[in-house]
Image (cartoon, rainbow, N blue to C red; front, side):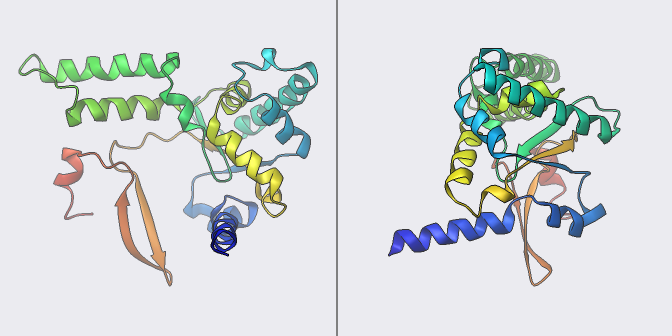
Length: 230
């Protein structure tokens, strides 16, 4: 049946592309410093049952106890990053909680957007009006979102996870499909300031790069100017 074939292909893709210990070991220095925390069944269930809560304090007592211990594990790994940047990036094996940053209630995103638009207005110096549909405004919005996904503590990471639909979806699938769960880990990386527009997906076949694709389909003048070098 088509549904079964589609499901098996999706499973194999996830098992092949998810972040895991073997991948970290094989890539070594070719990738950013990466720490993995294997989730227990109880931790995954606590994250799921706490979905849509805004803080650990709002969770049931038993779940809150489990999530606080998980936050302590994250803090321990953060201390091992040893970078000058206090902020760090985190995700599960397959998905990040980036959907949380686009909520209108996200104070951090709103603050970052105000800052980005302020920088844009200063840059334009009143030379022309800003259209809400312009690439400049879109770039400011994306920059605000990118900056908002970083967190500063294990508690903030856990509270971001329980608000994320993407994280909830991955954990649900992981618990339902036996092969997924052993590969479901919390991934921690140092925060990197990537030049806007210079994030790519790279496609490799037979150990050769066959294609580069800009992650965000938004026009960046500096990227276009360096197209021949790229």
